[in-house]
Image 1 (tube, rainbow, N blue to C red):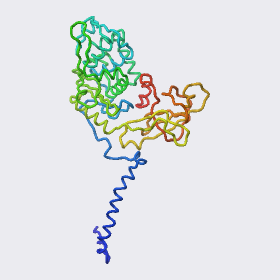
Image 2 (image 1 turned 60 degrees about the vertical axis):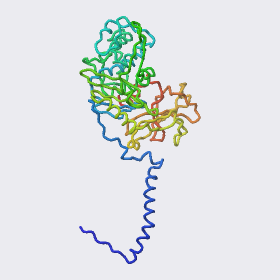
Image 3 (image 1 turned 120 degrees about the vertical axis):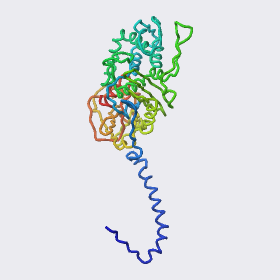
Image 4 (image 1 turned 90 degrees about the vertical axis):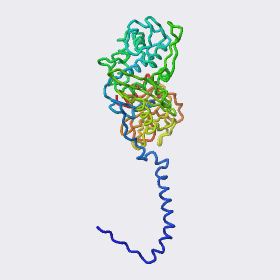
Length: 420
């Protein structure tokens, strides 16, 4: 259809230059002002900037996963629940179980079985003794299979007894796609894990100061009772030298598992951990994965400690932050849950604990924070959770798992975050 040519009224052509002089600057001013209005602090929470949506991302791995260590959120996963061989990534579980069950300064004796263990080795001698702590350094920096067997026999009584502890820990942490048959990771029937499970295990382990200190060490020297020189162990994890902020974790390889890697990095106080299984370009893929997480999933402060709750004489007991990309912010909802008042001598109730604020992302619980009466002395951490609750309508506040030690509370956190 042809467009009808508009009429030009008398005098219009003479006025047009003047109108342009007045209207065009005004229009330009409106165009420049509109985005500022839309993205004001009040509106920015719900604003979605399409260019900030995470782009499509792939690796060369058979399976991969990226986790925010603080919150436990898996922010990238490809074939993440696929059960695969994990080679020496096994030693992450070996190390954390040994740290939690053993005493670091106890001497560990190398048995004939440990001495004869095939694969990567510290070249320990039969009957040699070394502290558990030093042997853990050899385990994680040089991936010594002899150290893995010696540690297992020392802590578990037998290698089989230690493997039982490893599988108990996997159940405790909700690692439903993992089963261990040995402490070193040599290929064996019934020995497997998944990228997501290894990410969750790593996030758990990195909250242990001893584990965290060991895996970020680039060079460790240890006494050698059989020679005039000390052991000198350089960390096999090249990410410590290749990537800014890298602070762990473990390499792995067998002829059936191929190249496996878990790395971690911390920037501006925020830590991520990446996992790849069977990846021929793992160093580059890990750098890209970590860059991706830091760029597109910043840790967003959701609530501060002692944040007032609109309409209630209550304050939040802790702060909470969660990794979100811009497109998810509008999907975050808050729900206030009040506890029924009951006679109790429990510490939290006497401190003025009245409930919690839950945070949900697309309907899924991602965390909670306790709420207290205004003027109450807020304890360092909540120690009790009253049983009877009164769910309220959605109300402003914030969410985060109540503070507790990682060793006692991580299983519940995983269930809340991942439905494990």
